[in-house]
Structures are given as C-alpha cells and as structure tokens.
Image (tube, rainbow, N blue to C red):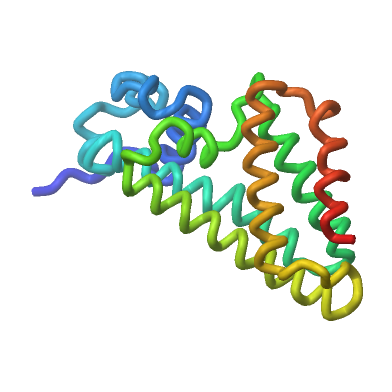
Length: 192
C-alpha cells in the first residue's frame, strides 16, 4: 500500500525556492533542502524525483507568483508609464532584499546557462511571456497616444526586459534601491 505524502508539496516548493534564490543551485545540497524543508530525503525524492526536479518546481513557482504578480499589475491598466515605473521599482525592492539576492531567474541564468537546457527553457519561456505582455501594453499605449510610437512595441518591450534583467543583476552587486531607482527614469525615457 502506498504511503500518504506527509508534507505540503506547495509549501515545500515555496521554501525551496527561497533557499535556491538565496544560495543558488550548486551551493544548495539535498541535505540543506531536507533540513530547511523538514522532510526526509526519501520523501523529497518521492515528491520531486530529484534535486533538479525540485529546482524546476521552484522556478515555476517563482514564475507563477512573483513574475505573474508583476505582469498582473502591469496589465491592470491606467497610466502605462506609471505602471512600468511601479513594476521596475518593485522588482528593485525585491531584488535588494536579503542583502541583494537579486532575481531567481537572473541568478539561475548566470549560474546554470547555457549548459542546463530545462532551466534555459523555463527562463526563456518566462521572459517571452513578460516581453509579450509588455509589448501588448506598449502597443495599446502607443495607439492611445500615451507614449511615442517611434519604436516598435516588441523591440521596446525587449529593451525594457533586458534593462530589467541588467538592473536585477546590478542589485546583487549594489543592493541599494536608492542607487538603482534613478536608472528607471532613464529607461522610461525610451517611451518618449
């Protein structure tokens, strides 16, 4: 008879995500995970198959929570410039927390790519969704005359996503929101 899983896998993924985000994949051992999650190694493997499986679940959780929240706020409407500013400043705030742990996706890309195909696909898919959503918002704003239409919305969205990723990497080097936030205004100049 199969044993009933004795822990909440969703909560375990959320807690593992925090550990991977802070330490990275390579510096996080299975023992670190079992101790942090309060589960046995057998239970961890039964639920996720491997450390890699838990890592991929953590990336998906990050995408479905933090990244999704940023996109939802962006799509909420209102002044597009203010919405983009708010999104960028909020991402800075999150990235500088905990001594500057940055962004889980940016950290994963720096640590694991290009050798890790599943991680590359997960990050690429998340970036594509972000870029598509941003391009849609920019296209609508340009059509309403809220922003200049001198740039292709897709190219402008790609620029803003690239800027954000660089900003999130910078948050690891300089975990100071006051130093990074003024850069947002420079990037918003691309909307003029």
